[in-house]
Length: 115
Length: 115
Image (cartoon, one colour):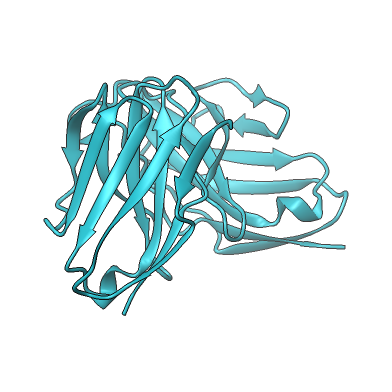
């Protein structure tokens, strides 16, 4: 799987928008961009994924650059419950062979939300 | 119960003990996974089961022995562990592990301490 680069940490204030960046300059045309987050003392939680177009769901929005070499996870109004480690992960559309079912987690971005 | 459950949530065991971790998913998924999360390290995939067949063994020592009796249950049998095996063990499930758009759902994890 291609590699992603994320800032080690970011801070935000409660009820403000948060933009979490991810660089993936070696992304292939068939890689999906996934975001997961891990709250303290919990397992990771799926947030959102996309391929080429921007995506919205009840948790967040995903903005994908036109050249797909970067993406941004957007939390529209951060709450204290959004404090977590956010992971940006690439997965090939046909995840076979040694990539079968595999999520390759990096260090992620630690998001701190201030009241 | 909904989602992915894991028992026990905490486990302390000696190096000569034998214990088992249990995972159950109530999502109707076809694949189940074991991940390991050590302190200060990213999550590492250990095993993948698809339709009760092991399809991935990520170079895991034989002192970890997985078992998947049906698509809803997954076990990790532990014996003669080492202190460096102390970690958070996470179970996950998904519907279509061979597809890049597949979403994984994680349990809360079992915090294992080997003394």
